[in-house]
Length: 444
Image 1 (cartoon, rainbow, N blue to C red):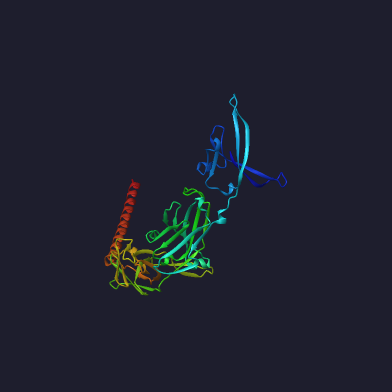
Image 2 (tube, rainbow, N blue to C red; image 1 turned 90 degrees about the horizontal axis):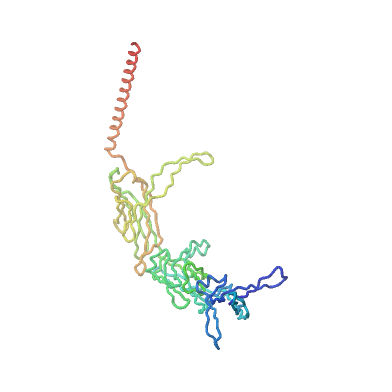
């Protein structure tokens, strides 16, 4: 039997005495079956603890216990206990000899004391948009003989300024490499074709973004989870230790971009039900290099006055506050996104965009505005959002009644009046007839 004798626990009953805690690790019973100790059964079932018999010198039996992944709780004095048993005629077992041999004291060094995760370059990195971004993560202080699995993640938090002033923002995962070497990307799946995460050498990993864009700015950290002694841990296996590197602040230089947008209603006859509503959005962009403008049309309902009272009892006229409804978007790449078949959106010129609503109904009435955002082109030909935006003025769209609708008013009023008069006459005649009939019956 292999066991461990730990120390350090004090007994209240023994003044100042030290009590040893003996734990049975694994043994071979009288029937030559392998039996793990109660505290080590799961590790034995997972194959982390084994016991085998070999042929020693002079034909002596040699028993070897192996622990693949020692833990802090394994620290202590290891010993081996050998017992000799005989079986009596009444089929009971009797121990006739026993000897205990101390093997040695095991000290387990905590990973947190030796493990270090470093990222490079250190401090702050400033790049031009479209330049490659290369970050390196190095895991130090991990013994190669431990044969541990590593989960390497690159995380990014907000922007550079947000991390400095303490607003920090939300940390998102950029990419990860699992212990079996499988690379997966975070929410931005487009990076799968525009970047790579590679194992350069033992304990050294490199994240590459081939063409950095403004959205890539932020504070990057390498997060390493160590599975000590488990080269390929299962998804449910908890990490032995997780360490984070210092942050690398990445700042992307963008060119100065100014944009403005003005919305107007196209000239024409009064708009009526069934007409085509035509709205124009004129944009002006001031910058250098090639750019494209992405335009989105939004509609707010026409506000109605709402009368409320403040704490002093004075009436206040407020406009109802509502969220706008997206109508259509013309993407920077020319793709149109519309939410109704009777709507079309196109580009009239380099800076002019048109929205048309065919066969307009009362639901199309409201306040219309256009939002313009500028996309720039990096040196590699890729497009990125520059962050420059502009919101136009609001244009009121109101549909007037058609002549045919106005003719229905007297017709409806006339029919209603005739029906009312007819009902009154019938009721009067019926009433008089019933009264006369009741008098005749009374006279009889």
